[in-house]
Amino acid sequence: MPSVNDRIKEVRTALNLSQKEFSGRIFISQSLYADIELGKVEAKERYVNLVSSQFKANLNWIKTGKGSMFGSEPPDPRLEHIIDLFTQLYPKLQDCVLANVKTLLKYQKENKL
Image (cartoon, rainbow, N blue to C red; front, side):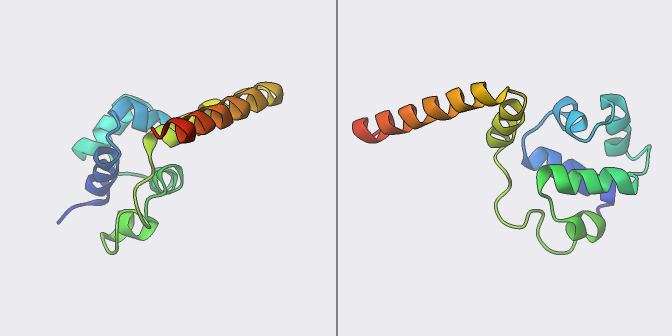
């Protein structure tokens, strides 16, 4: 029967993230995360909660294996990445990004891409 550690690894692989990317998002070292995957270290409650909140994974599923891994479709890692980058920008630069995205969307619609 899969353990909490196994289910955390399943979340990572479902999102197609490396151990380094995944561990960085839950604020632990890659080596600690590798030990969790290998079962050398038990996943603490804090890690379980971070996996659930950072990756929108079903907390009950992580803990018990019951239900679905994600509430619906798994989050798109590209969207998560762009949100992270966007929030690091100054507000005026965020406005520039939004204007560029609107221009790209208009171009896409006009050219039926």
